[in-house]
Image (cartoon, rainbow, N blue to C red):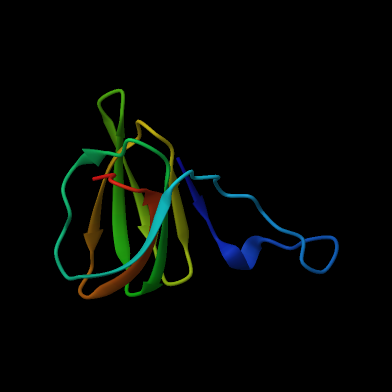
Length: 103
């Protein structure tokens, strides 16, 4: 799992890129929410981009929870098998890219 802060990325040349994930048969969805999701494990990787609002992303690994505070522009990357739950702080709009059919 990782949090990517776009403003901290700088390439050496114009159009340098940071590869985040390669997802076969992906869906790209814009979500609106004002409520937490549920603890879940995706059946593939997920890229979670906060467009508006703030989101507390909790992850659980080996029984220990970690809190990732996400603000507009932040990207959260979960690999297949990473357990997590998103808690928006008020209204949030989120772009989610994940394998089609994932929870």
